[in-house]
Length: 245
Ligand code: 2AL
Image (cartoon, rainbow, N blue to C red; front, top):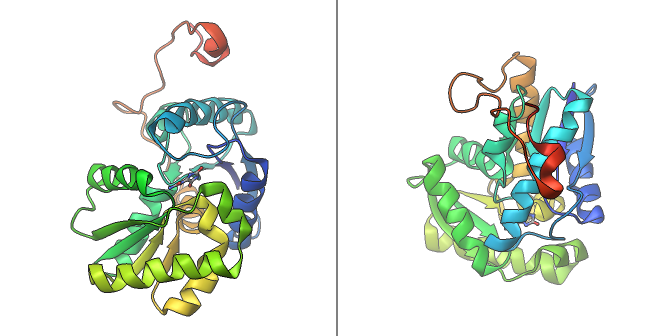
């Protein structure tokens, strides 16, 4: 199967890192096509960044139809553009936050999210509410590590995330940790070994859920609001992205 993996930010190195994490868990025969928007922020750390990232995801899902993907994964923890993407394709589309919440809630009665900048906690909190996981998510914790600084991958940074996770497990009385950024993907194994609880990387679980849905022949419903966008003229730089009239 072909899996279109969309990194909603425009960092080449982060796209490569996410692709590596996806490839590491993908089944033999799954082809990962990793893409990023042609415009927008290098990292997504707030509402303004996210507005451009959502449009960038819509662009890449639209252009990515040329590959005829069997499934699509949006690899940023704010799930930017997820519902727009679902309108634009019949393939199943998974956001890493949504996938991670589902996985965590199957493994523990309560989970905690450890993320990057404290200012982005509200984005995760609102997703928890939107997806209906208020009873399972017991806390969202910022580390104030910038998204692009995660590429450092060093011991001091790993230790900082580990300590935040330990604190979250104790304070929230939760049984699992959800990593709140696609850029934390490479730390999943180390943190799992050190913390002794399930640590959920949304990139990995979204890839496996996407493979499962595609293998079952399940795709996005075209009945109702996820129907194909209405034919419409788009103007300015978005002109090529409107649905043909
Ligand atoms: C993210 C993420 O996954 N990618 C990105 O650019 N920002 N998430 C976050 N909480 O900062």
